[in-house]
Amino acid sequence: MARASITDVQHTQETMIREYLREINVRLRALGQVINLNDRDMWESLRFPASNISLSGLGSPPAADTTFGWLLFDATATETIGLLAQMPHAWKEDSVITPHVHWCKSTAAAGLVQWRLEYRAVAQGSALPGAWTTIETDGALAPATPDNDTQYEHLVSPFPDIDLDGFGISDMLVMRLSRIGGDATYDTYGADAAMMEFDIQYQRDARGSVNVYDKEGN
Image (tube, rainbow, N blue to C red; front, side, top):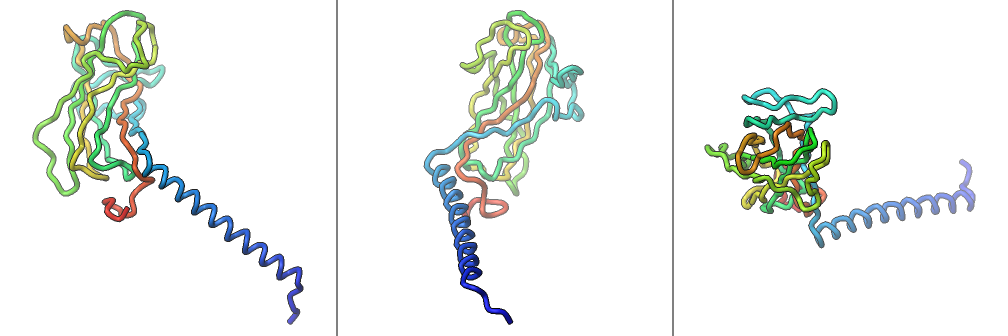
């Protein structure tokens, strides 16, 4: 059996040292991410693009736009879509969430649009609540999106925060989103409102969870 040369031994040692250093760097990067998340909670979004939303299952759904894939909510009726969300494993449990609608006007005209969100929060092992909780935009827009009465201008309508105190990861939100077309005070835009996406912003305090169904091991 041939003896390893000094060069071979040195090469093997250098390779092992590089592998150790690579592993140390990987672990340091992971530790840095955890420290950053724990030091400052970050926002992330649960996203519901209009092109991925099913229109079956609820009465009076909006029409599907055949050019851009948007959903067209009528100006004179209440049209509704159904949405389901599971709270992610990175979510900061018990914290508030902030839902909002990304949409645009289908014509260049003045007027407000009112969005309504009805929801029921249900924890693992619990029964679905018997009543909906309702929140509305009341025609309001996010500060960064003033309405210039321009066709296809990207607008954002924020809902009030939802307090999910007492809820954890993998708990569910059952939701209905509607445009209250024709509301004399808060929906005065006389054409279709084109919904591009519904989002729920939530705070993260970890990259995920150690356990499958809870964060007790984090």
